[in-house]
Every structure is written in structure tokens, then in C-alpha cells.
Image (cartoon, rainbow, N blue to C red; front, side):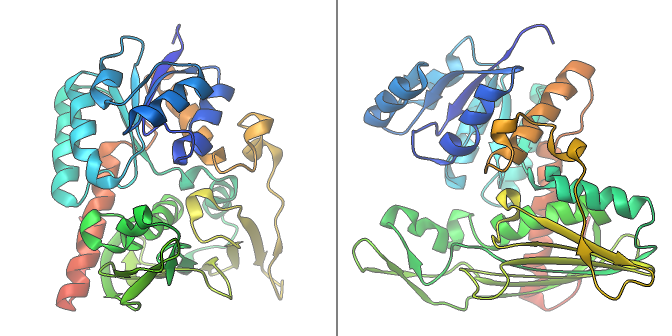
Length: 367
């Protein structure tokens, strides 16, 4: 890789997720360079141009057409992914799509096929697997720390989808039709690292419940009907035979917002956080084995942490930075290790299996 990778961000306003996680990362990683952004309005585009000192557009088509943009990052609502990602692929650009890839399985299948026929690199924003504590847990298990894996339990909070939403513009989270639900977002962001560490599901059973029927918009006191299940329960069997139980709820718990326990024949590992969205959470890893009567903190070696510049460590974009850095290595070495659209499609198929299991009450095979 001789030249820097030119990046254009669709959804590159000064206040959105990209401003927190993508733009600081691109500024810190020498393999990449931000070259353009687009937003949905000319006023926000002008503000972005002034802040980031790059061309800014109110049309994603103009950004895609920018000759200096090699990689199009799509950081907008899930309902907009199909049109924008399709346009970028048809233009022959590499695409990094935030998760979920599409609004439902059919869209994910279409986008995966478009990426395949276009013959370009694709990236899915499933960065939780790059957390240092997750990678260390995986290495410990592979090196026999807990012996044979017997089972795992995970409980987490979605942090949003609670009784109140700040603004009317964020109320789309509560409508299942918009594709950003506790199942599709925080649950899958947590399940992807679980599968990275322990392997894939063979079978799943599930219960999806709409616990809160209404939510309140804080800015004006209006009510929003809730159709997205805010209580997600999934049990299953992993490929190696271990049992798995996952429960995610909407909102914030007064108890633990994230706890993941992995139990083995010789020991146990526990990952915890005060924040339930695992892909951005600051995790703590503890373990115990043999004669230990309790788990105790496990120090994460510096090599797992210092793989990104110091200013990014501990930030919400730290794992995004690790994903970008691995993408740069893939492009240099000709490897394919980062989650791509094909990988994202596998996760969408898992969502489909969970929804079918909840609808029918029957255990589903996961393919």
C-alpha cells in the first residue's frame, strides 16, 4: 500500500457518531486520510466543511463521485443503507457500512451480492471483537485457561430503548420497521464478540417481548408507540457443544449493565462493564481457575492495548481504530480478516433465526 486510503463519510456531520468514532481515528492513523463528508442538509455540510477542512456535500452521490475517495463510510440510519451502499458499490468504491448492514435479511443479501459482483472490499462495523479484553479472553481459552468450555451467559442493557428518548428525531429506534432495535443493534454487537471467542451457534431458541408499550420524548413530552422488542432472550448450543444464554433489555439497569461469564471444566472468565453497548464499552476482565475460590482481575498486556495511538485508547473510537488498522493490514498483505458484508450477512441470518424461533416457539438451526 503506497498511498494513503482516501475516506469519504456519508453522515459526517459535526455531531453524529462519525464525529466521535471515525473522524478522530482517521486523523490518528497514517494509512488513512479524510477527504470528503456528506450530510443530509446544506447547513450541516457547511459546518462540517469548516470543522474538518475537507469538501462537504449535501448529496451522497457527490461524495461518491469525488475522485480522491477510495473508501465510502456509511454512517447513517439503517433505513438509508440500501440506497447509499448500493450507489457506492456500483461506483466501484470500497464500502465500510455501520452495523446493521441492511434493514432486514433481504437487504443484507442484496448488498452482499452487489459487493461480490463489484469485486471491491467491504467492511461491516462490528468492532467489538477487537476490544483488548475480548481478544485476550479468546487467547486464554485457546491456551487452555478454563479447560473445556461448558457454557456461557451474557446479560446486557441496550442503554437506549428505555422509557424516555431525548428528541423526536431519535424516536425511530422504537419502531421495529426501521431496523435499529435491541436485537439488531446491541445484542448483535455483543453476540459477534461472543462468537469470535467461542464459535457460532448451531441452534437457537428465543423470546422477544415488547415490555414498554410507550416511550416519552423528553423535548416535548409526546408519546411514541414501541413496536421493537425491548426484552431479548436467546438460548442456544454452540458448535462445540457448549450452552449459551443471552439476555438484553432496553434502557439502563440499576444493577449490572453488562456481564459475560464463560465457564469451563478448569476455570472461569468474566467480562463486565458499566455500559451495555459492548462495541464501545470499557471492559474489565477477571478470571479464576483450579483452586481459586473467586475470580480476580486479569491485567491486559500492553501489546493488546497499544496497537492504536495513545490518544485513541479508552475512547469510544478505540475499537473502530483497531478495525481500521486491521483493514489497512489486509489491504497491504492481501488478506481478508476484518468483518465484511459476507460476515454481516451471517449475522443477519442469525437475527432471522432468532425472530423465527420467537415467532414459532420452535428451536431453529442456524446456517
